[in-house]
Length: 115
Image (cartoon, rainbow, N blue to C red; front, side, top):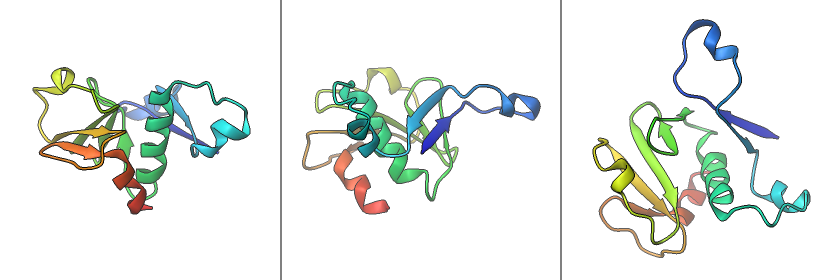
């Protein structure tokens, strides 16, 4: 029902409060009548629900997701810029409302094929 994200922790810090909590999938927003939620939260929930099945997700310092401790993803709309993550290696922008990707810009809908 719920998925949590934390930054890298060791020892007893793993048991502390998570940094982010997401519903298990985007349908829960509608079943709880939370349709007025920010679009960014719904985008991040979708990305999280598609990748957390087969990959380890963490919360990095300067982006939305760190996948398998290697790839950094920033989630946003079609006008999202990469200035916040420009100095990060292996970084990708996952964008909603685009049909085709180019360079490090990946359409959000493509991650639906992973599940």
